[in-house]
Image 1 (tube, rainbow, N blue to C red):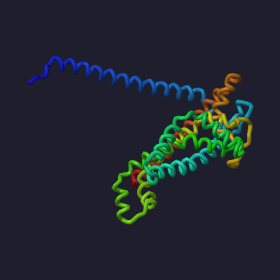
Image 2: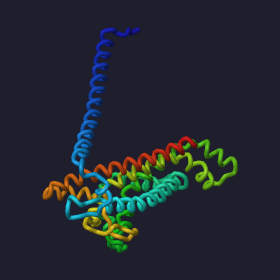
Image 3: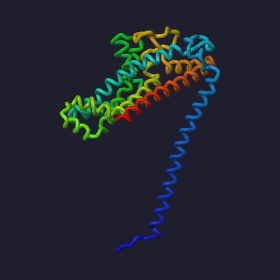
Image 4: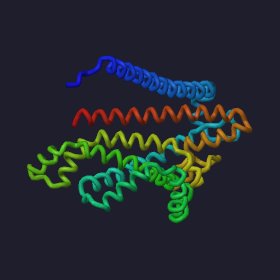
Length: 294
């Protein structure tokens, strides 16, 4: 019978403990590095926006003068954009996830569709901008309008909603479906009354992430020709518009010529962060409410 040698065990334990401590401190440094960079970014934005972020800045229209410039039009344009992106991604994304998980037969076609949806989530956003320019701006003749920008952004974040909704639907226990079928419910009744309510927290989480990405994207809007000029405040989905990311982009470029535009860009970044925080907070509250219910 071969006995365990104490010296060899002790040496291996020392090396394992050393590796464990090394990895622990490495991960700690990685976390601290991310937090420090984030803190520096927030500090710079906050300092440069002091004195510029006020009520007049939020309610004034765009102006060639930095002292009189405001972002009222950009805020309204961003809200209009989200009114297009939100419903379109929810309806198409959740509908696609329900079909793939509940109706589609598992096979090569289903696997092909699933692979392409997953790959679309990693496509650069500027490619979706080119798609929006070709389809919505030129083919459909929408021009650089809210509906063209909203549909382009919806295509950009649609894969995120689909994948998140699929994962949420898969997490619903099978015995809930079987109990519903056992009571005589049809497939659609089971989906509507059992699957969707149970998976709603996960679906809302995916939608939150999708809208957060859409509200901060600039490249697709630049490609489809969204301006940041002295345009009227939009009143419908077919009007030209500008959005907060576009305004930040153009003011950052103009800061090379006029220093005050850097302050305007910093103030707009702070507003965008606040809008994101409010959106996420509301969505998280709604998600938790449904999570507690189901």
